[in-house]
Amino acid sequence: MKINQVYLGLGSNMGDRQANLALAREGIARELGPVVALSGIYETAAWGLTSQDDFLNQVLAVDTPLGATEVLAKVLAIEQSMGRVRKVKWGARIIDIDILYYNHELITLEGLTVPHPFLQERRFVLVPLAEIAPAFVHPKLHQTNAELLANCPDTSEVLLKG
Image (cartoon, rainbow, N blue to C red):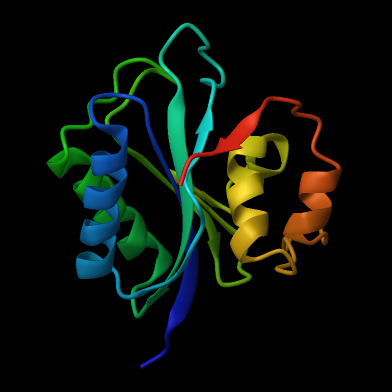
């Protein structure tokens, strides 16, 4: 059985944000496979729709036997089981789980683009991603996560919380 490595970005800005991230990590480990690396937890101002509470963000590396579309289905089910409702783009959310990378693959399907199309523009993704995988090379942009972070146009503050 082939084991795939998937990098996931987690975010929460509603309720007990720490507990939401912990619950998401548990669901991911149960449904996808073992979490083999996890970043610290970072607090950041909301991105996109800025008039909302700050987010806690974290990045995980997970080893999974699942294909990319199966991973997507599982993370959407985890979000839904935690009460995620998609009403407003970039709106407040109990949990957000994004697929950042799936192995070194380029995937373009309806509802799934990997690598995540905006990860290179967002410090709240790149700071924790570069913490756990600084030398991982973006398969489309051909830069490491550390290089993407150094060149990121986003200047927002990303504060380590735990």
